[in-house]
Amino acid sequence: MLDVLDRQAKNPTRPWDSVPFRWLLTGRTLIGLGSAITPVAMALAVLHLGGSATELGLVVAAYALVDVVTTLFAGVLGDRFSRALLMRVAATLSCLSQAAVAVSLATGAATVPMLAVMSALNGGLAAVAGPSSRAVVPQTVPAAALPTAVSVLRLSQNTAMILGFSLAGLLVGLFGPGWAIAVDAATFAAGAACFTAMRVTGQDKAEARSMLDDLAGGAREVLRHTWLWTLLVQALIYHLVYGGVQGVLGPVLMTHRFGDAAWGWALAALMAGFMVGGVVTLRYRPRRMLLAGTAFLALTACFPLAMALPVPLPVVMAGAFLHGLGLEVFSVNWDLAIQQQVAPDKLARVFAFDQVGSFVMRPLGLALTGPVAAAAGERTWLLVAATVMAATVLLSLAPSSVRHLRRQPEERRTEN
Image (cartoon, rainbow, N blue to C red; front, top):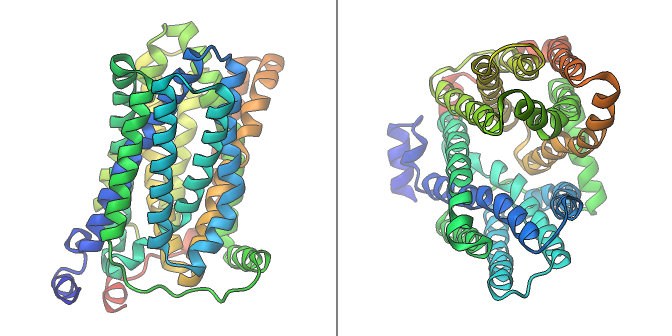
């Protein structure tokens, strides 16, 4: 450990000089790859078993519901106990659960209700690891390397997602959904091994109280920072309106206008935007991190706006690209702001509130989009969604703490 710290002292801004960070990066990337394969494989597994669209929705909802419910308590655990340990345990149990699903599908023993139960279990396990996997990052690198570490981790996750989505259809087509999910189980096993090898610095642990008291402490930490709760509220509204755009209106409208392949091209452009945004953040280090990040976030309105207008497919793809670019630049600066400004013993709980705040409104948006768009018109609702997304971004810049929150100076980060 001492030789690692010596190398970091010479190159304090290079996260990959840290052995613990390399294990974290490898483990998270492998798990991200497998986790991108599973949704495609699980959907096709349900359909192969004769399940309806409604039953598929219930399987997906089971994962999402348990994930959201469990995340807040997982944040408490991440501040009480070793975050690396929680990640190891969650990855190991996820490996076992996915292996059980793979075996049941391969042997013909699987049923749709069983897949729903296992999906819910995996949602809970993902929630256990989620806050800790973000809060552990400052324990793996010196403070000066944290900005680059955040960018590299997000870039690797996006790369893994692209590869996973690309591999999923191929694996299911060649070997069946059971074997595709077996690959996910293998990535969890590899991730657990990486997290076992990861030796991190000690963390400041929260004083153990009741779960509700600890949750209240996390909520107070969120409310203590105006910039934090302001942008969480903005995220609630964003996911309420955009969830239905991506999950409901986008596929329907794009297919009708441009053909079956158009939605896939649009999502590919979106992911390309994420990738380019990640590369940009490796060099672009604005002092007023949230002012710059939130300004980039306004680009997310370009995607629904382009879909609403009578423009050719390349223009819609450009809108999708700008959406991904803006969201990624914001997300990197957002993660860094939390890690630099929030007390270390409350990091996991704050990240848990961030995750719940980001996704709790998405199911409601998915449910409401169809009826609302039918009443108002699909293109009209897309224009409304774009306007709401842009307006909430502008309103979130009103607090001075959002506009003026500054990245920690390089000298201070090196000394910490």
